[in-house]
Length: 79
Image 1 (cartoon, rainbow, N blue to C red):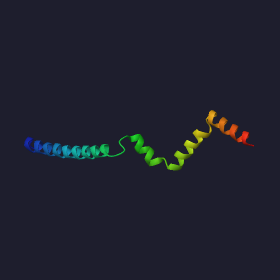
Image 2: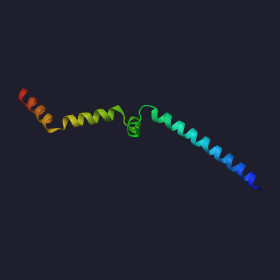
Image 3: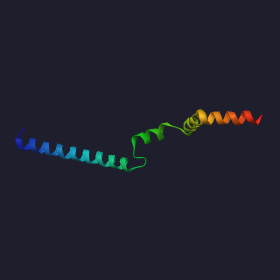
């Protein structure tokens, strides 16, 4: 193999690599500009359903001591 042919093969390989990198970077830029941008939010929106969020919110609401105590107090005093 002559040095000129090896240089042409190297140039072709570099051009192909450059195109692959460019296409990968452009698709990454498109994904980064899309909503939602953070990976955490994308994971949450893909894995957490509305029932889980509602359950967590109600649990946090009812098991906090001041709220639970006031609910119990109003329930007991109404009887």
